[in-house]
Length: 303
Length: 243
Image (cartoon, rainbow over all chains, first blue to last red):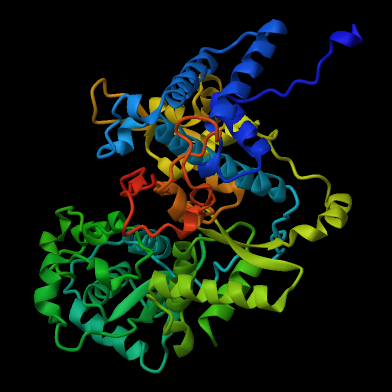
């Protein structure tokens, strides 16, 4: 039934309708003729009723407010209820209504700006390059070899000597940790890095490997050496520590007593939980004299 | 090498927007690399405010150069984006951007009120809008544009609302201070004019002098007139959008 289809603007609420009516007057919101607005507002509501539209309660409340304002205006000034001019701000219903309208208008404008941004975002494309097919920057990163890595590495080397020790002889052990410390420090002269296996290249017996390994642990503990593993399962490399603290280096004899590896001697990527008591200290079981200071190194302790 | 150029090249190759903190981490990592050169090491521990300042300089340089793309900050993270006027070609080249459906006018109005006045209770929103907001609040919360933000310390302890994590991203805003006309809307000063209302001239309360009616509001000297009626809003800490 086309004749019943009426062009009828739908408003968000009474304030929205009021704003629309103010706009129709084409005056500043502060100078609006509230009486005319009140009349138009009520007319609109009546139209809604004629169209059988459900009238929200808010519209009715607003209509009542407007009619109250209108009724006040109809009285001569001297008969008006003394709306004390002193506390006008809250008392005057006209003023309260205007204030609400202004506030609502501002937010309606703000909503319009948000809507502009909303549609603008459809037109903005982000720069998203595909990840280049490059190797990750991992190789440059040095990973500190943990004590477990070192132990595993030395265990591999020790296997080579297993068969040779069938015949047991009791003899004075010719190797000492401090002697091997000197050996390793000489080895490192002029070479910032060398592979872990090279340390044991000249070792003739299992005992010598063990003592050399203890010397290495000692040097790491003294922050003179660091052990790094540049890639997983890769060869461990031993290097001179970047900046050995000159004053605070403990002497080999006293440092050997606790046998721990200082956490801060390792690069920061190393999880501290890895730093534990070096387990290979058990090897001296077979070589009681090889490591005279290592007897108390078996107490496991986490750094 | 200037900091801003380094940041530019990082953002240029990044697959996601980067925050100043993330950029600082990259600078630190590069400085920690083995054999890093002095000028790389020098940027270790660059203060975040220096990074932000460099990014802002960079962004204004890009704007001044009027390129087809620019550097923007959305929700605290920086990225390169295209200028909107090139959308017709990009739409055809890359396709239409996948965006949630547009918000309705009531939803936008409600969202605007929450954005500028957060944290705010439902009753306060309804006071401003003049209508109930239950329906749109559901939509806004569902889309993470609005989240609950604790309870107001008033009788009944009503729930308060604030903008949610999706808000800044959805509108491409750098932060809540980046809302348009934020200062004005957080605290709306409404000047009460001297001649309050104009009415029909034949009515009893019509002002005697018509000239007074036309007095523009702006020219009213605030020092001699009625006190400003202001809608005070405490400078509430805008809740950080959950990332």
